[in-house]
View 1 (cartoon, rainbow, N blue to C red):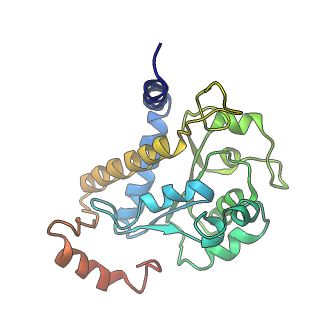
View 2 (spheres, rainbow, N blue to C red):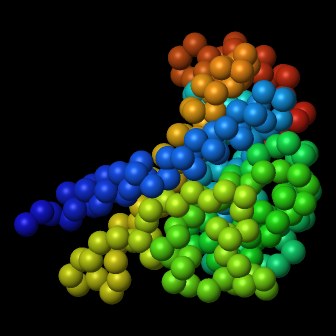
Length: 245
């Protein structure tokens, strides 16, 4: 019998294989949208609440990442200051519009919204608000979970139903994937692993697509190698445009 670490490793591999088998055309579509935005001097934004905010940070300020990749971050929706409050805040109607107004988004930009459950008001309203402002919106969500649990938004719709394009992270309902005798519920969440893969697949393909259109997207180079001078020029160029620099 396999130990639980091996089981977890194999389940994650299975989910990544499902991603390759079922979501590849959607990933290409997402990359096309991002490349088209970059080719026209537009931007990629990303947003998530709770642990999904990690996928927003995944696009930002790291080696090989897009300079024009900007996370939408709010401590009230993250876990490091008040996790319990964040759980309630992500259900609050009207908050997404206030948050998005802090960022200089424009028609032609692309937004990725990540939510494993896809049922809370803030991610859903972030999609709707961004669409009103002319952005294309890509959702990263767990469709098995979304189909099992009702929306907390007044529309009755979940994230996958309002986004322009939805990519399934191929996880199980509840995210945690393993039964462990003696534990009251499953263990071993997977959505951060598969979500980070989805984000990076979109970005690397978008870079290749942009290059094919004659546009070389600006990227950061590791500051722990030879990137300091390169990055400093970009910081000076964009520090008044990117609020988290």
